Amino acid sequence: MTTIRLLNAEEARNAIPDLSAILVDCVAGGASVGFMQPYETSDAEPYWQGVADAVESDANLLFVAEVDGKILGTVQIGAAQMPNQPHRADLKKLLVHRDARGKGLARLLMQAAETEAAARGKTILVLDTATGSDAEAIYPRLGWERVGVIPDYALWPEGGFCASTFFYKRIA
Image (tube, rainbow, N blue to C red; front, side):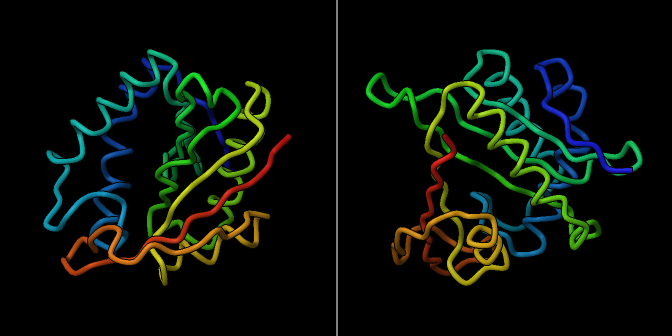
C-alpha cells in the first residue's frame, strides 16, 4: 500500500533517518541533487534537519511516499518567495530510492505537491534537473514545460560539469 503524506516539522524530524537513506542512495546512484560523493548518512542528516526547520517556519512543504509504512520517496515545495513572487514556488529534491523506482511514486509525489501548492495560492511552479538524467524525462510526462538548458550549471556527484534543464508548470 502506498501513501503520500505532507509532514509537519515533528514528523519531518522523526523521518530524518529514512530521508537520509533515500538521499544517500540517490547520490550514490549518480543523482545531481547538490551533494558530492562520497556521501554518507552523517552528511545527509544536517541537510534534513535544515529541511525540518524550514517546514517549521512554513518556508518548505515536505512530502513523503510510504510503501507499506516505509518512506521510500520525497519531494519538497519551496513556498517562501520574495515579496514580488507570492504566486510562485520551487519544486525541490524529488527523490525516490532506487529500490522503489518504477512504482509510480514520483508521479504521486508530484501530484500531491502540485495540489497542495495550488491550495496555498501558488499558480506556477519551477524546477531544475540534471540534463540527460533519468529524472529529466519524468517532468514532460507530467505536464511540465521545458524552458531551456544552462551548461555547466552544477557538478555530477562523482565530479565533472553537469548541465541543468529548467521547467515550469502552471497549476492554477
